[in-house]
Length: 220
Length: 200
Image (cartoon, rainbow over the protein chains, first blue to last red):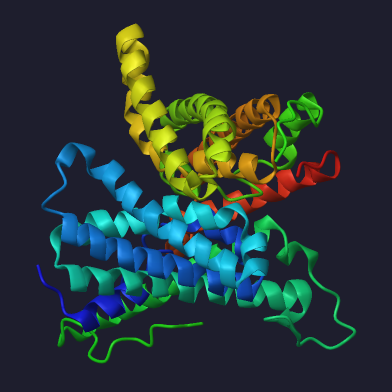
């Protein structure tokens, strides 16, 4: 059951992207995607939490009785999230205040539990760490792409720098919740169509079982 | 942090948390189970009921634990872990009580209870309660309202999805994609209420 690190990377970024394909972890973070900086802070937090908890849970997998597995997983995850919360409060107090409860909600981000359950429970610690990290990066790529659109159209800026010309009228809807849903749906549509086309092409060619170089994963 | 019991009109807060700042539509909490369970009308009803009950009880218990145990001992930094334990414990106890009291209800509700431990809406409501420093009555009212709002939203979505399924949808949008767009339109509807009362 040992997959190659390169394949894990491509899978988690594109073919099995946590947001686009598995539809996980949309819970807590859509709310912060109206601002690129907060999205970056949040997704880095999620990536690190996923990586470290996958690593820890993979180390502990033989010690945990099946019956209490879930609660142990949640406790390990909350341990790392508390560390992230304390670090954010110390070094990025502004971002921490704006993110508010969403930092704590990393605990219930389904991606972390999902990776712990689906991958770390059956793999070696280091590979699990890598799997968690790349899942987080796949998540980051999608959310940053959405945040770029929302901040650009909603505030006319990117990372706080004004980009749009002075006459630009901000699209208020981009700041509010519905736009996040629409944008996620658009990105999902695009990604699934691209993948379906590639699959059809691969089937037609029938030569190689897998696209050789792999698609360019990050669209962000 | 003061121990005020009563700072905002609880009735206003109750309706605000159902409609104007619906925990799902404006805060995106509980999306995972919302999307996966809303395929089926009956399960949506069960999960909505379970979320409402668990949310109200856990908010009350967490408030007591937070202000009578954690704050006096200066252990607020452990609050995430403590809240998770409270949720898990309440879910476990509720499961046992329902199993004893009413096996019929257990059959319809029981499978959803474990799912709830990791439902972001529950933890989210508790964290909002902590950050906004609600009093006890407010916390319970807010949690009950949020739970009902969640319940309402999932029933609405389940009903809409039942209709959408009978209509042609582009292949790439099937399943999650069209559901997200549906939720987007629902969210616009809920945001329409937001001028009336502001919670926060």
